[in-house]
Length: 309
Image (cartoon, rainbow, N blue to C red; front, side, top):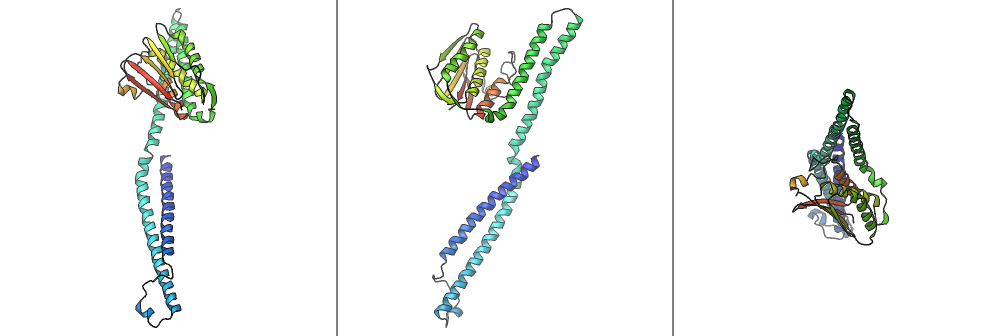
């Protein structure tokens, strides 16, 4: 696979080089041909000038011009061939380096599959253990089984959502909607979960925007859910015509951990419930919509900012 990709890269580079050489050298040849007009005085050997009438002299000039142009054409062809050979060698040497990001993406995909398999094994193993205990005793283990099944089901749904983000560009539809009302509605759904926590909204009365509403709502729900999990006492939501900001108090996240916060299966606090895929999904959806989702943390607060316009 990578060999084919490397060869394709080489051929594309050679095609671009050939096009540039042909256009450039062709322009040089045409400019030289236009500048060497027959009426211009061109140095002609003495033996041709002596005893030569005007017609013969002009013919000698024309022949000398054609010799110059022929020599120029040969030089340009040789130079072009040399450039092609050099570019072939350079393209071959750097092709491997150019496809390195593709190799890394392929390795990340393999790691993702391995991690997903590992994460799926955990709830399945727990379900099996509970069933074995259920067979041996009369204890009500069904609630544990139900919780692990719910966890496994949510993990599978998150994996499918993450996989489908590759096709989100085909599914997304821009439409005009009141994003302010949407934010208030989704925040009200979250309120019952906020035990001993407060949520403040800095949202305009109305904000009619033409955008990818379904994707905006999906990212909003993920950010609100994440804030509800990790907030100590307060959550803040701010909406403007260009960006959405969701922040919560808690522990300051180090730069090293913050750099991984959008990675798949990564969790800053592994003691909390979840699959570690929510923020990865939000990031993938944002990128497919050509939005920018960033995270920052300072003074015991973490902030997520979605620039959607």
